[in-house]
Length: 66
Figure 1 (cartoon, helix red, strand yellow):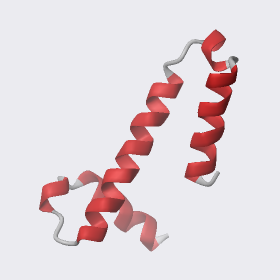
Figure 2 (tube, rainbow, N blue to C red; figure 1 turned 45 degrees about the vertical axis):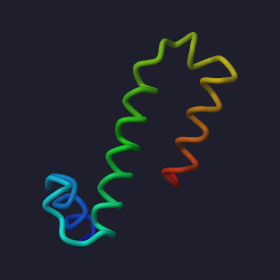
Figure 3 (cartoon, helix red, strand yellow; figure 1 turned 180 degrees about the vertical axis):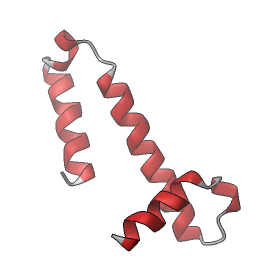
Figure 4 (cartoon, rainbow, N blue to C red; figure 1 turned 60 degrees about the vertical axis):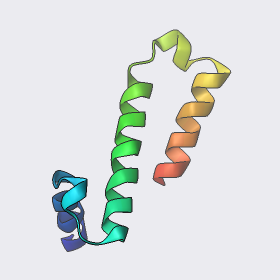
């Protein structure tokens, strides 16, 4: 639970203000996954049902670990 709070604080911080390279990488990839999720959510239902759409959602799900 405490780790989630720290990750949330890092996400709200400007990436240039982070002192640790690991934190910068964590924030970069977390924001990238969030953006990717938004792009997939904006796909039309018919695009989501195609092989390419299903593959994109499956890939995101496997990367996120959920």
